Image (cartoon, rainbow, N blue to C red; front, top):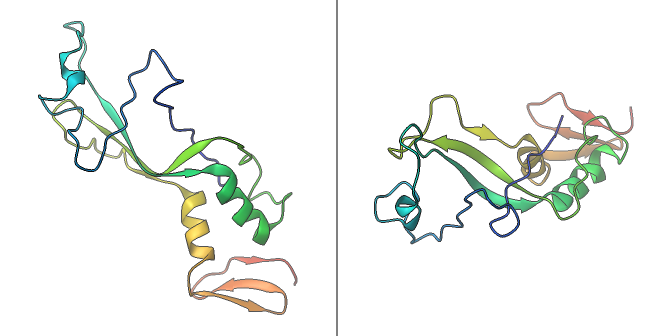
Length: 139
């Protein structure tokens, strides 16, 4: 349920072009960005995947396992020591416009945030969220 997608590493994942952009830096689709100077065949065009809110998967899995348990079907497939994922990702075309239907929100990151929110209460050994039917542990 909480499968996570690995974010490419700017150093290890070559020959893929991975750019770590500072908050005040140029974006790769801007004409002045160095990636725009790289040669590309005429039948191709640049497209980009933007990752926002990077996090270490192991930390999020630890939070999920503390509520759902290490063998829960909710946490199956989420093990990932040293793996980085993102809270959100989307595709951007060569013109800098977000592609339709491309934004994806990490359900693992969302659930972890929800676990830490004020809406969580303990009742009879079960974790219950206001306005939700999700329960874990106990009855």
